[in-house]
Amino acid sequence: MTSWKPDLASRGGPRYQALAEAIAEAVRVGELAPGAKLPPQRDLAWKLKVTVGTVGRAYALAEQRRLVSGHVGRGTFVLDPAGDPTADTAPDGGVLDLTRNTPTVSIPASVLGATLEEMSRMPGLGGFLGYMSEAAERRYRLTASSWMKRVALDAAPERIVLTCGAQHALAVALLTLAKPGDTVLTERMTFNGVADAIRLGGGKPLGVAMDDEGALPEAIDRAARQTGAKLIFLTPTIHSPTTSVMGAKRRRAVAEVLRARQMILIEDDVYGYLSKERSAPIAALTPDHTIYIASMSKCMAPGLRVAWLAAPPHLVERLTDTLHATTLGLPAFGPEIVARWIESGTAERIVDALRAETELRHGMAAAAFRDIRWRGRPDSMHAFVELPESWRAGDFAAEAERRGVRICTAAQFAIEPEAAPNAIRVALCAMRDRETLRRALDVLSALLHARPAESAETLRRRVV
Image (cartoon, rainbow, N blue to C red; front, side, top):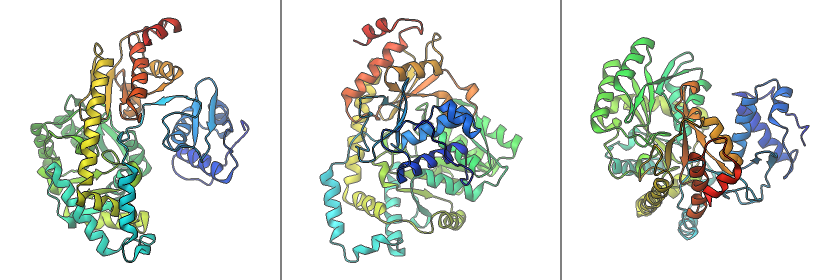
């Protein structure tokens, strides 16, 4: 199937997303059958008149969606939709993917089954096949408000807007507040979906300087003064990729800049619910200048697609209008499950179990990287590892994948990739079992202690 060439002319958005959607459609209609080999990236780039990087990003996105599986030296192959969608590796035992931060602790089928059984006895069960009712939405906002109190945020239910996941929440906030051509500030390194979302609406992302606590207040103030930016995105608690956490003093300083410059902060707190010892969100310090995002994707299950915005009262109606423009109506199925789990204490128990598992995996990383400069926290699902001078991040990632382990480089999170530190991010919770993670960490540890020119046999002996 190496001659496959999709038609992207009718597809909007970034070219890599359009190509990923074309792959998904071709798989869905059977044009690309299970086992079919996609064209080499360079060949398809030439046919479509796009860059090799664009095709590479499309293939990576398709792999994240479990549509295809890439194998270094062999190519990219279509997966069987009937296979296990949660498997860690390709059917032939291929690459161990440590690029995605997903909760490790699987919610027992008995817990989900019991909840579904309870729901099946509800009067008017068929209502879940329609749009969410106003009564149901009020209840879900109330449970969201109670959940946010766990991190010392007192957000009234009427200030909360339900969304279909944190990425949707971010898109709603950006579409509401950022006009085409606006500069939107963010950390110099940040979740890579942020820059894409900003550019999708015609905005211009601009990274501000960071230290070990995250974004510097003086850098935010300077960038806002120079560009006139009125909107900024930050992750103050367990930043990705660096794992940094802002202390209380830093959060107060950021809040002062927001008030002085009349800015709005989009505060991403999707990882914060795993942290027991943390300062209150910036939203608690300056609620009139902050749109706060909470989600169940990192602390419970990404498939639930449940997230919330806690917004200043004067922005709630505008955000709700944007929400309706992007969805028409929200499904109630996921929010109903989440509400029941919050009300029963099940959500708290799931988070506690995930926190305990994350702490164990942090210990495994500490052993693997014991004499390497790295950053991590017992409540962080990932580690940030600085590479020795003998390695360049791109070369290290390519060699790691050749040996069966896929990781992210710091450049993948950088607003200006060429200025990124020589480092990698390792998702410690990507593997469902610790033994598989241990094998992957052993490979990375061996590479970190090797020089690029060392022989494969030497590296094999190090891993053993």
